[in-house]
Length: 110
Image (cartoon, rainbow, N blue to C red; front, side):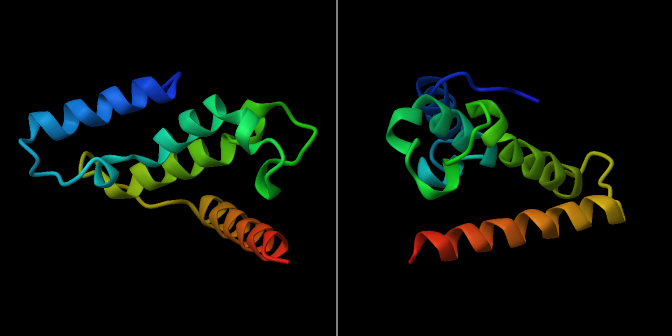
């Protein structure tokens, strides 16, 4: 898995993707991968540190691990190379993450 170390790397990768496809893959926004958001969040931690989703005693990379975890599960089922299904344990984990995110959004909206 490619790890993007900065938002600049993400912008460069997306620009290259759009350019190589002559724009056929859509706009820049349509060319983001889930893992790109993790790099952007971590680089802009100062802006997000007080946000509802990021309040925790864990270090920054631990607070965003779920994004990578979900991305890996998505890649498992969506890519044609040896397409696989998620195990029941991973499905349960995905449901757990979804429930956690739903709770965080409700808390933030109060």
